[in-house]
Image: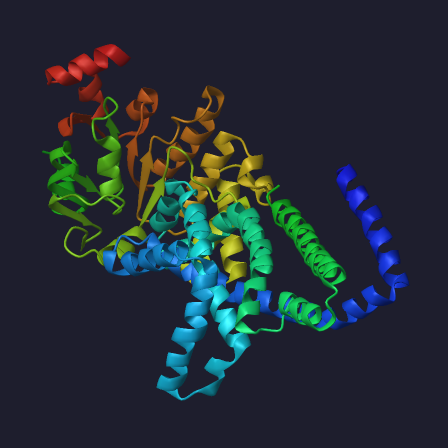
Length: 246
Length: 252
């Protein structure tokens, strides 16, 4: 067991101080009640878009390392375009250009649902970053690993699945965790799509009560709590997966 | 010619014909031809950069020659890339750097390909793996991860891993070059046993003692060509080519 760092103690002390303060203040209590549903939606939005980004990123990352230009070029295009456009612009584009067009073309109404739009926008945006994370992880595994797998008669897909990816995932786990926390914060951008997540709820409350100080204090504090919990979770995961290595 | 030699030319398990290989502008294999009979042990020696490893790697499709023909176990490797997987299932390879899978235990290293390529059950794969670990002399290391094993132990696990696929041919690419001197013997002992059991083996090595004792034939390569092939006796005692003589005078 490593020693608990001093800043964690400080944080816990500050957290207790804030918690007691909130508990005793009518205004903060009301603020917290109002924002609670926003927190839930922020978490839902983050988890769903991260799941989408993990899948998109893996597919695009595997496509990028292909020797076949018909496979690698579309993936490179996706990564370069999405990385080159601000995430906010990408969200607006997907929400107000792409999904309405899809809704019209397919006649399926839920393309217009703001949560679907938000998840799609954030997932596609972060998928491009995760593609690069996966690619770097796969390329960090020595070439001999693939050659050993192939010379045992495994197909390329089997070598990837049983030999390369298990090792690559362990390498990229910290980077994946980083991007999860970054995505959690960037989910606040979905407020412009009227997704009633934490930031949107905060804006709503502020417009209603004009208590900007208390409202945004609480919003910032809630984000901080979520990201701290997130990084603690990532660290735990890293320790668990490192255990099997011996 | 003796009867054995006649049989050799009749049905070689490996046939390499006029193979050329370039890496960019570098001509690493120049018109290489070689035949290996079933059960034969051929040791390839030569200075570094002479194309020994590249030739070996062409035999299981890790490198693809630009010209020439390679037939392994009756399957033409150079004609159709799809044949590569069929050949690889019959050809085991042992690498200089062992290339064990570091995230798997010794036992799992040996069972993985048995299960996903040969479709054996877990129980059967493990039974075979344990028997092979016994054979290479480290039955007690089944649950160790590669990082917990010495170089010699790792290489013996790698040999067991290749043998688990029941290969008809074993390729050894400088199997002892990355080992500390005191571990070389334990690996060579395993290879010597294998040769004695009649395994067809192609071995790239700098271990001249091993070559002299175990090889049926020795091939000397230099600058991408097979300069001379002969039995150990004639090869070491009366080499014909000047390049062979020069090489032998440096290492013996």
